[in-house]
Length: 412
Image (cartoon, rainbow, N blue to C red):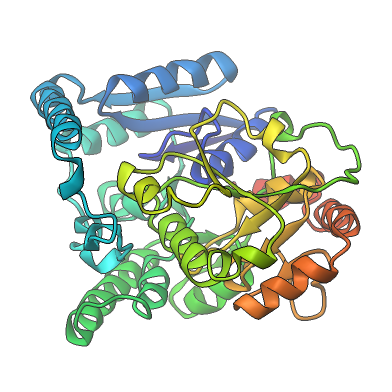
């Protein structure tokens, strides 16, 4: 049986986000053909619990991790104290909280997460990776996500290196630059150094995997070999596939912590939904964790329902029209695939549906980038038909057997 070491700093279970889903789809689908070994870092109790859940769900996976929970006790306590103090501040000084404050802005160029192209590395994790390579007789290592790409320099040159590029960082920044208010010189600085670093790391890989053709075109000149290998929706997220005839609400799925979600939702609310609220007959349900400031800004609009974090999206799919107003990012749109396979009609920005349509095949979803386009969709669309066409498209282009075969062929 083939054997593969996966290096990832992102949980692959539970399936609460696209990154987890993209990893788990192939772990589960190829478990009878590939022996998987998983290496990661645990920084808190929740991450540890997720690993334990994964091991119970997929006992065939061997899991190794560096445990950083104890060194972070002080930081965790500090974070909880700060959260508590902020809650007290909101109670005693509610009028001083300005919903129009610049903190509502969604700007990758102001986010410390993007300031450096790489992060300070844990020496223990480098040691662990090499120990696992020796102990498990590993001949090929798969690095998942931008955050692990420089670990390619930490493994022996004789080891085959596969990189799964979930989101092109420099592409995301170039798209985010259009709406950022920071100086052009700083934006160019951050974009150029990020792109240079990203391409240097990619050049070290024996195989690079991306999820759509556009990403492949951007990277092909830097890769020894590149493959477009999208994922699909795990079986446990495919619900009742009945046809829906009644549609009485719009649905947005995604939390504020992911910048493209925040940028996309605020853009949709401020430029399309609220200015045309009298002409849109549907309330908008918003799933995910959103801050007090965001909810405070829009509290006067009864048509906006912030539902918070939910156990399952299944009951919210019923009678819903899915809105995907994403403007930045890269990769494949997991949320759209999830709607397609559950026969939920999709309304999306053109960029937000990247990898889910092309100029010759787009009758299975409704595309908008402006308010007038959105209103025309609302007025004229047969949403039942769109939901069924989306399901047919998913069935044709995201066939499980075909997708698993492509990824299996990448692994030696």
